[in-house]
Structures are given as C-alpha cells and as structure tokens.
Amino acid sequence: MSESPAQRHSRPVDGVDVLGALSPSRAGDFMTCPLLYRYRTIDRFPEEPSPDAIRGTLVHKVLEELFDLPAAERTPTSAQAMLGPAWEALVAEESDAAALFDATDGEDTAHFEKWLTSCRSVLERYFMLEDPTRLEPAERELYVETLLESKLLLRGFIDRVDVAPDGAIRLVDYKSGKAPGELFEAKALFQMKFYALVIWRVRGVIPAMLQLIYLGNGEILRYCPDEADLRATERKIEAVWRAIRNAELSGDWRPHKSKLCGWCSFQDRCPEFGGEIPPLPIFQIERPGQSSSG
Image 1 (cartoon, helix red, strand yellow):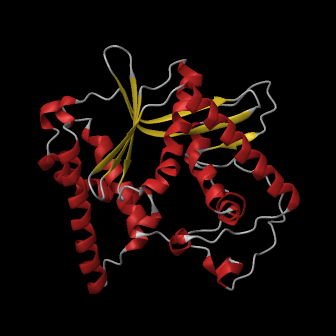
Image 2 (spheres, helix red, strand yellow):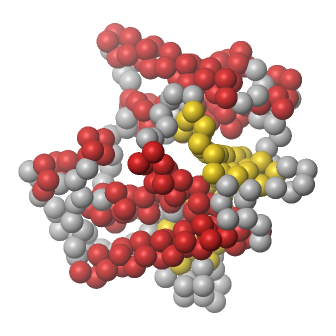
C-alpha cells in the first residue's frame, strides 16, 4: 500500500509505544460515518475523483505558490496566469486529476472549460477577501504532529500560518466551497481546533485566531480559541479514538445516513443504499488512524 502524505512527513517516535495516529480528516470521517472511515482508512477503496475536490486541490496549489512571488506581484492577474501551469503540474502529479476530463472527447473538453472558469471565479473571490500583497505567511502547507499523553499521535497539514510582530499566531485554511450554516459551524471549526491543539502542544502558544476562508461564497469564519477550548478538543479527539478502537475490536462499522451521503463514493457498498459490507481485509490491519493523512 502506498504511503499517505502524512506518513511521508511523519518522524519515528523513538522509545514510545504509540497507540496510533489521527488526522482531522480521518477523525471527521469517523464522526460523519464509521463505515466511511473504515472504507477509507482500513480497506482503502479507491474513490472516483470529483470536480469539486480537484478544484479545491488546484486552487490550494495556486494560493500556496502565489506567496512565492514578491509581494507587489501577488495580483489577480498573476494568480490567473498561474492556473494553467498549476493544472499541468497537478495532472503530472495525480492520476485522478488526469482522469477527470478526457481531452479527446469534445463534450468533456467543454466541461473542462466550464470547470476551469469556475476555478478562475474562485480565485477572483479570494482577492475580495484578502490582500496578499500585505501578507507574509510564516508557513504554508505546514506539516505538524504531536504526541498526546495517551500516546495518540495527532498530525496533519495547515494551509497557512501567519505570525504577527508580537508573536500572535493565526491559522488559516482555504475552503473552495461555501460556508456552512450555523448548525454546522462547530464541525467546520473542529479541524482548526485540532490544528490549534497541535500548535499549542508543539510551540507552547495558543493560536490567537483560527480563520476559515470560504471561497465558494466569499465568507470568512473567524474564531479565537482559549485553553478551555483546546482541552475540550483534546477530550473529544480521545473519545473519537476510543470509539474507533471499539469499532475495530467489535467489527461494528455501522453506517450513519445523512445529507452527506450524496457525496459518498461508497454507496454500492453501503447497506443504507442496498449494498453489502464486504469482509475486512485478510491482511493484518494496522491500528485505525495510523495511516491517516492530513
């Protein structure tokens, strides 16, 4: 099995019997649907690429590379010019992106042009929300990890870390979709609180602000965490991990039906949609979450 991005960056933890590793993405999968977690983390079934997911990857790539330019050159025109080369690089790196559109099919070509126009619109919206000529990020696509006292390893990638002259830290995440309603804000912030907890454990400083930039509808969600928030987040992560371990021991990976099922790639293997859950892989299963990516 191929390594996840987190596995490639992760450092060995010497002399410690690590329980396993968990990223906010995989923790989110389990909270959404235990069967989804199993299929992605244990079975590792392939998933069909979606235009929305690939759009997000492409836009993230452009926004990361935008800050390689001198401040004065970080303009909407520069970002649009970077889109084509970034797409070519993405196709070269990821077979999923290459398979998304068939260049020999005229209808697919038309779909690609429409999809690329949507990517341009998302990038244009970014410049309505921030002025990158006035920003100097301390880190981009930062891999972070920390080992909790319980011996659970937390890890993942943060889109951007800004550090103010007074040392205050802001964690920033780009979302190519639309901002969630109030009922789903807590779920959206869980990922950022997860990262804030890791930064606190590693650097001894609680980030002053968590910022989610929703490029789909041009909204920004900001939150200022405190120590109580991060301790509660740690307890929640530990509870999720215990639930994952219980599911592993019992073999009970029951699905949880929700509105998110419409975006799931595994409906043909889900009893909620008439499918059957296949047997677990015969090979020795590594501890759940140990293979998770950020």
